[in-house]
Structures are given as structure tokens and as C-alpha cells.
Length: 432
Image 1 (cartoon, rainbow, N blue to C red):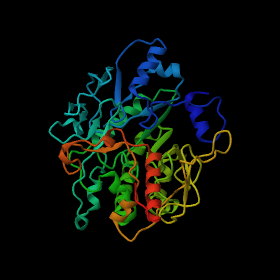
Image 2: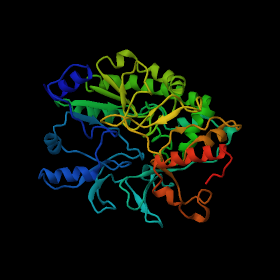
Image 3: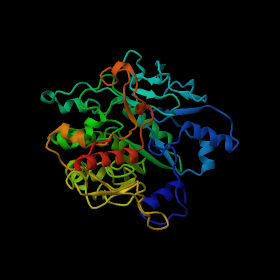
Image 4: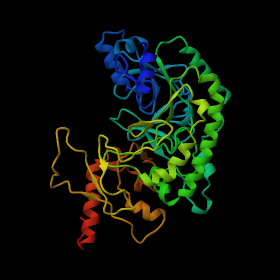
């Protein structure tokens, strides 16, 4: 079997001659530049700077010589622009904070703040506020939240649609060139069309926009999926309309070139639970996803929707209750079931007893408050990959950075704190 035949057989649920292997073809299966360099050294390949093709996670390009040694079966058709809104072109040498020499786009422009953190700018425009931050000792960029004050009376879904629109001529030319470049390859091909992921939390803060409007704060976005659901519905509906038009336009260019169409990178699960209940998924996300691309657009493709570690076709309902590495929901589904227990996965070799310091976590349930503030009260302050701008005085009094912004507490520790606080208050004690 060729690599392409192998991948197609696996996606069609037929037994291939061997398990297909894929690293580096997409932003969710990529490899950090340090790992790419280490593998090149391990295999005794020619020393060369690794290209940073996805700067958000500092993913390194895997050249053909290494791909052959790794036995990779898939090649990716990448987007024209990176997550920071600039194309990969005119590669320039750059020394990463950990001392590695790499190659970056000429528009990969950085400065260093007073804390020693590396700042990256949308579109490479140093005159715009920075949208990415690599903390001292870090290996990838966090998105800087640039949320304008929210006026409930003036919220406009169009502000959260600024980044979605018809593909430009440059975008179509880029896709055409990418398709031509893999025309004679025996590898399977995976590609994507911008704007098809609904509520992808890496994209909500819009690190590619210079002055994003709308709801861009991560916490506020998740609050909005409960407290401003009509707003989110309007965003998703218009986003789908635009995406379907773009898919129609690229179909003639990619129908014969792709084996897998990457549509959605939205995460629906965390290490200890899900981001939303199955009922919320059915109401908020499923109606838009059921639209799907028209059948003739995917007649020769396998549509892969990566949803928090699960894969499914465009048809069918994602089962959020399925067991995954990390955790599953127990009896409850969150706010609608205050007694719902959140439990960890069973041990690999059998059941695992609960440690006395790890009691069952229960959602505190709905309080007397309503609307967005009430929902925010229920959110554990979990560590996420996106962080607030420490330069904003309203978030950090005196301009000083909070220690948890850089390191963050573990999710389990924060969840335990939230549990103890709720139950201590309910028993009439203090909240220490």
C-alpha cells in the first residue's frame, strides 16, 4: 500500500497493511522546533535551522529527509497566514530564548518587555498592541487578551465576525500552489479552509487582528455560551454561511488534491471534565455543524473534525460522555445538575480508589444571581493557554504581574479549592 492508500483505508474502517503515522501536517499534530532539531540530530541528518511554520506553538517544519526516516504518511496543505496574521515568507534567522537557531518569517517581529518576556505582534506590525507573549522560560506563545470594555446594550455579533469573510485571491492562489506541490506525491493529504471552526478558543481572542472587537476574553466567551446564547447563535450562523461559500469556491481546487479536510479544532473537553454539557452542545454547536459542507464538496474526502481529542464525520452526534484520557463526567452535566460528580478516569490496570485529599467535586449549582456575573461566579479559575496583558493597570494594580499569570495552579488543585470553598460556606464556616 502507498501512504495515501493506507490512510484512506484506515479512514474507511478497512484494515491497512500498517498503522498510518502523522506528525506535523496540521497545527494540532505538529512538533515543537526543539523536538524536530533533536530528531534530526538523533538520526544524524544534516544540521540545519528548523523553520517555525506555526509560531503560536513554535511548531517546526519536518523536512522530507526526516519525514522519510519517521515513516510519515501524511503531508499538510498549510494556510497562507499564521495565527498571528502574517504569511511564512522570506525566512530569516532567529535565536529562540532557549538558544536554538531557527528560521522565522520576516514578519515574525518581536520585542522584549520589562519582565524579559518575548512579545509578538499581529501582522508583524510593531505599531499595534502585541498579541502574543512568550514568558521567560517558556517555549511557546500565549495569547494576550485585548478585551475592550463590554457594553451589553451595544454588543454586536458582527464584531466577532470581523475575521470571517470571502477568501481572497491571494488565499486561493496559495491553495492552488499547495495542491500543485503535492500532485505527484504518494502521501495522503490533509488541508483546511479558514473559518470553519466554531468557537475555537485559540481563535476567539483573535491574535491575528490588530484591534479586535466583540467578546474576545476567554472567560467572557465561555460565559456567553450560557448567558449570551443568542449572541453566540448569531455568530455561528453567519460564520457557517461564510464558510459554506468559501468551501464552494475551493472545491474545484482541492477536490482531487485532498484526502482529509480539517474543519474544526474546537476543544470540548478539559483534563477533568467537559467544557459544556451534551445538552448545550446539541443546542449551541450541533445545529451549525449539522449544516456541514454540501455532500458534493466532500464526496471524495474524509471530513475530520478534531473535537477535544475525538474524531467523527460531519454526520452524527459527538458523544461528550465518552471516556477519554483525563476525566469524564459522572452522573451530572454541570450547572443543570448540581449534584453531578466529576470523577477521574479508572486506573489502567483496574479501579482506583479515591484519595482522601481528592473528594468528589460537585458543581455548586445556581445561585440567586442571574446573567453573565452569575455564570462567572461558577467558573473555577483554571489555567489556560491564554493570559491577560500584565501591562494593563486595571488587571494588575501598580502594573505588577500576578504570579499565577506565569505559572498557574494545576487544574485539579484549583478545582479542589473551589469545592472546599463552596462546601465550607454551605456549612457556615469560613472560606479559608
